[in-house]
Image 1 (tube, rainbow, N blue to C red):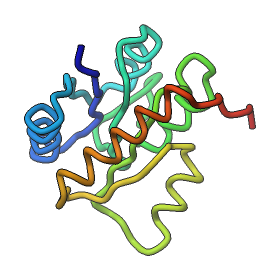
Image 2: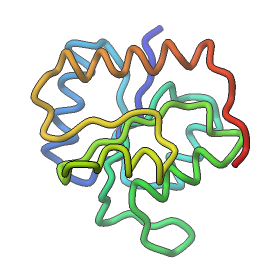
Image 3: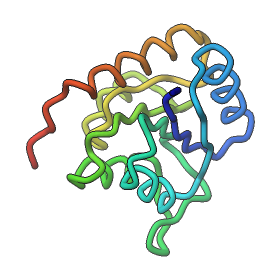
Image 4: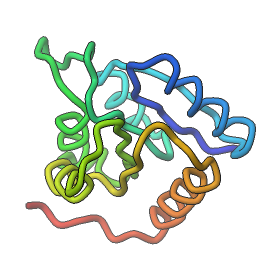
Length: 142
């Protein structure tokens, strides 16, 4: 059975690129959404193996308030029922030091810059994160 990746992305072109790479080269099942409540629901239901999270979401709301990918990821990583699912942050706004800052602020597992220039690098990062999940010790509460 192929693994399921949830792509949280507000740009249709980026979403399509992720979808093409992951379905054609990676044989993953893909779901694309901008709805944070749906993300949480699907992870809690146990149907997601990994999340690719856009850092700057422009249309997403949770509990009636606008949220970005860092806030959603932080919420996922603080919840014992969702924190074991790997989150790969993706952003087009990468500047020097952004990777470390975004990972520290969100608790995400990894980070990749957009546009995706190497499908192989994206797939390798995903495979690494999913395989680590199988033997990972859950992080301690902070």
